[in-house]
Amino acid sequence: METLRRYALYFAWLVSVIATLGSLYFSEIKGYIPCELCWYQRILMYPLALILGIGTFQNDVTVKRFVLPMAIMGWLISLFHYLQQKVPGFASIKPCKSGVPCSAEYINWFEFITIPFLSFTAFSLVLVFMLLIKGTKK
Image 1 (spheres, rainbow, N blue to C red):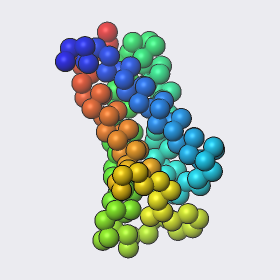
Image 2 (tube, rainbow, N blue to C red; image 1 turned 135 degrees about the vertical axis):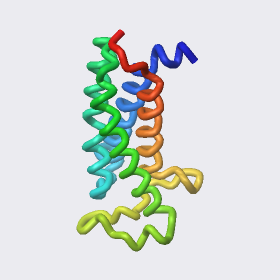
Image 3 (cartoon, rainbow, N blue to C red; image 1 turned 90 degrees about the horizontal axis):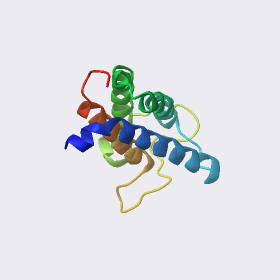
Image 4 (cartoon, rainbow, N blue to C red; image 1 turned 90 degrees about the vertical axis):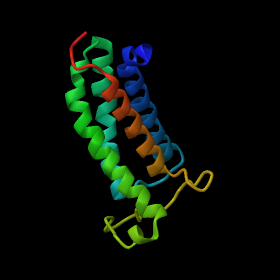
């Protein structure tokens, strides 16, 4: 557990970079057009890759105070987005006014893994790693 705590900042950065590259892969290579909720998740994830990268290379765990609010907001948006795709009651809520509908599923691996699920997982991991970090600068 102590090893996980020691490298939590690095792991959080790694997750944010993989999530950022994954979203760019889906849109730029696969050609999937992001919906409005996808954009909000991107707006919150992309800076995390930069902030956590700087924190990792400077060994500065105080970035936690910037990362936590962004990760919590991204977590909530991705949870709502996933529920909108998978729970019938949420499908009637239409946050996407134009363009691609937020309920669209570009991927559906194993009948439950969608792009919002991947985003939810990434934000969850970042949150867990941030909560493992002690609040003082190393």
